[in-house]
Length: 449
Ligand code: F6P
Ligand code: MG
Image (cartoon, rainbow, N blue to C red; front, side, top):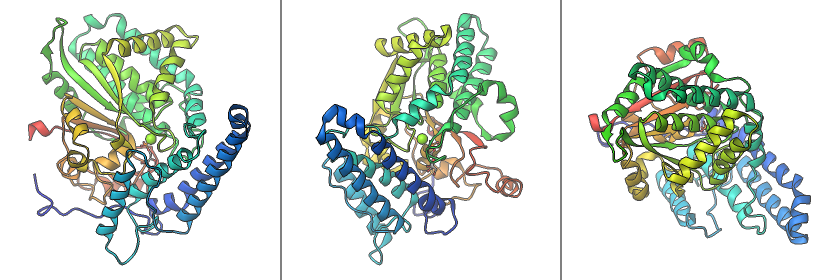
C-alpha cells in the first residue's frame, strides 16, 4: 500500500470550517450535552446527600463548577488544557495535546474550534470524567447512566422480537443449510447495523430508542445501505473454519468493538449469540469503554446490567437469552475487555505504535466488527477524504485482522463509494452523511492484500 510520503492524507475535520457539521457540533451539540450533565448531577443532589452527607453536596457543587468552567472554555474557544487528575492515561492525553500543538505549529494554541474535531470531542468526555474523578465520593457516578437504562427499557418491544427471532433460529440451528445460515447471519448483521441508529450523542442526549423490531423493516431499509460487504465478511468467517477440540468446525474468534448501550447492545449480543450457537465462531471478545463516553457507549457496568435485565425480564425468550449470555460469560465463550485506548482520541492507524498490546490482541481475531460512527471516524482518521477513496487507503495501514465497520452515517465522512454516488446522494438528500438514515457494512481484509 502507499506510504504517507506517496499518499495524500487530507486534513482532519474541524470546527474551523464555519457551518460544517463539526462546527455545529462544537457550537451547539457539545454545550447542550454539558448542560444536561450539569443538570443530571444537580438532580441527584439528594441522593448524594443521603449516601455521603454534607461531603456529597460539596462534591456535587465542585463537580458542577468544573463542568461549567469547561463549558465556558469550549464556548469561548479557549486553549485546550492539560489534564491534572493523575489517572494512568493522564500522561498519554497530555502528550497527545503536545503532539497536536506540534502539528498545528506555534502560531495559535490547540483550541476547541481550531483543532481536530475528533480530538476535542473525545477530550470533552475525558474532562467530564476528570470533573467527577476529582470529586470523591461521587467519582464513580455515571452521568449518562439514566439515558442508557431508559433506552433499554423503552426498547422492550424490539428486544422481545429480536430475542424471539433468535430463539426461533436456535430451535433447529444444526439442521440449517449453509444458505439459510447465511440468510440469518445477514439479517442479524443488519439488525446490529440499524441498532446503531439509537445513539444518544447525535441527539444530544434526547430519547432515541427503538420502538419496533428493526427485523420487520430490513427489506425496506436495504436501499439505504450504501456499501454492503456482508458476503465478504461471511467468506472471511467461512475461510477461518478449522476443526476444534470440541469436535466442531468453527472460526476461532470474532471480536466486537462495541458502541452504544441500550437497544444497540442487545442487537450485538443477539448477533454474538448466533455466531457462537451456529458454530460460526468458537468465542466472542467484546471491547467496551472504561469510562462513560459519548453519552451512550457501553461500559462494563452497562454490559453486566443489560444481561441481568434480560435475565430478569418477564418474557420467556428474553430471559432465556439473558441466562444463556450469562452462561457464555461464565464458561469463557464470551469475554468482555476494556482498554484505555478506546477512550483516547487517536486514529486507529496509530494503534500499532501507541497501544501495541491492544493491536496484538486484535491480531488474534478471525474477524473484528467495529460498531458505530465514532469507530468509523477513528478507522478513517476523521479526515476529509474523497468519497471514492478506498476503505483500505483511508485505514492507512490499520489492519490487525479482517475487519468490518457496521455504521449508520452520523458525521460527514464516507469512503469507498462508487464514482458519482456521493454527488447523487448530496443532490437527493443534502444531510445524507449526518442524519443516521444511511449506513454501511464495509469490510477490509489485510490478509488478502
Ligand atoms: O456529533 C455526533 C456524534 O457525537 C459524532 O461525533 C459521533 O460520531 C456520533 O455522534 C456518535 O455515534 P456512535 O454512537 O454511532 O459512535
Ligand atoms: Mg456511541
